Length: 232
Image 1 (cartoon, rainbow, N blue to C red):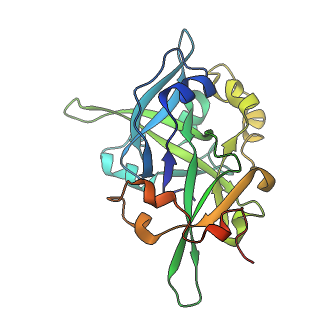
Image 2: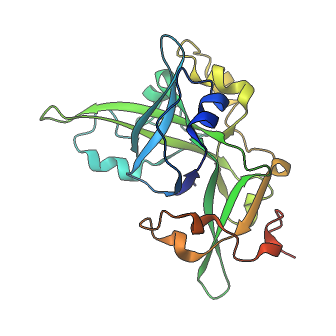
């Protein structure tokens, strides 16, 4: 699954990596949590645009926005059929910019050790996401999103059996294209990212609380483990 992630890249870097129409307003985030506001990249009439939406998808038919807290992730294997996601999968796909995410490893003493996972070069990347527009009975409008997950690659399998779908840059246009209707082509993008391109290292349990949105969350607790190895 994906329950926490980071986005520390500068506005200029985001604009360049995601080929945005304009440089966004952005502040570094070290511990983004569900129900918070997150950045998404969508296809606009003139090009790619970055917007802020709520993390936790609220289907258009929902009677209560609280359902979003249970829909922070969508399984890639069923996303095209699930009632909560199938409409967005057809018409409202997005990129969720990130430069790292967290996963927790169960230890023998039943505690959990958080790990930070990111690109070997620490560059920004994009999760495959879906977005939705919802209006409550009182007329309040909310835009929300979910992050798609797939089976874990070899690196992440030491921590969890699922991982977020990380898209390759050459696939961004296809994923964002609202005219792309070939389900199998889209589902073919929802696969585990290559282990060799990622690194993972243990971090402080400071990240366990979403109130802690500070740089210390991403610092290795053992510098000797910061080379991508989970174990000696």
